[in-house]
Each structure stands twice: as structure tokens, then as C-alpha cells.
Image (cartoon, rainbow, N blue to C red; front, top):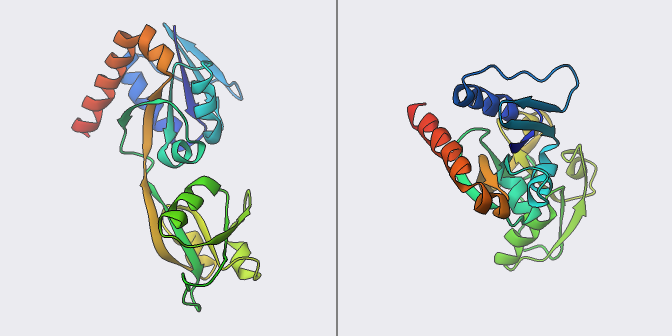
Length: 205
């Protein structure tokens, strides 16, 4: 049995489509159920941020998760493949009417991505005051609580609607296929077969 952790939402739907081809069988979670068993596979739906935790702790053998979550959690997982879907960017954004001054001491940055933000600014030797938020991050610079934000940007529409602009892109993000290191050792043949199928699927696409 191979257990697979998927993040709720669009990435899970994309991944399930590929697994349907692999298993030659439709995959549908019943209403509100979080576990789906099919053949020798068990799929589980979890919050995106929790995928690395389930995989790292062995509750799942493999998982699919955004690179931003992997980098933020600093997870010790086997990165098997960049799946090239679920693409977006981690970007710095600030109000359109302000030129962001990176030389300002203790630049105030609102974000839920504390580790990614710290790493980026520390590489540039810029001192920042990080304000950890869990949602509506765009609001922080609008009310004067922060100079800028670090957040996931897909189309840029949310920034635009809130009168913010992109000042810099920290990293490009897509979904990754990852494995628990112990599972990868014990079930290497099966996991590599899945990796190969996904790789061929991406090439065809």
C-alpha cells in the first residue's frame, strides 16, 4: 500500500487526473471524505502546509506540494520531480504610490512565509522586521502596519485590486512530487514507477 498526501484544491485535482491514468481507474473522493482507497493506493486530502508534515512523519509515503511550502517548512524529504503545474511566484509587493526603499533600516515586511523572507533579505544583508500574518496580507501596507509584503502571486490581480505592485520576485514556484526517505528506501521500485509515469505525462503535455 502506498499512501499519498495531496493538498486540497486545484493541485489535488491535477494530480488525481494523472493518477487516474496510472491506475486506469476513476478517482473520486466521496462528499467531505478525506481518504480514498483504490487498488494498492490510499489518497488523503490535507492542507497544503501540512503535506510535508504527513510525509516527513511517515503518515504518507509520497506527497505533492508547492515548492514554497517545502522551502518554508525546510522539510527533509526526497524531492522526486518538479511537476511543472500549480505555477506561481513568491514576490515582494508594496503600494503603487511608494518606491520601496530597500536601504531603509528595519524594513517592515508582512508575510506568512517567515523563513523564505528571512533567507532572502539576509542574503542581501538587509535588516527586516517580519510581521507574521495568516491571511489578508495585502491589508498590512495599506493601513501602514508594514512597508511591504511577501506573498504568493499567481496572476497579480489581488495585488492590482489592492493598489499594490510587485517590487521583486523571490522565487518561481510549482508543485513537486516528494517522498519520505524511509518509504523511498523500502518502496523504491513502486515510487520510481510513479515518478517515471509523472515524468512521461509532463513530457507529453
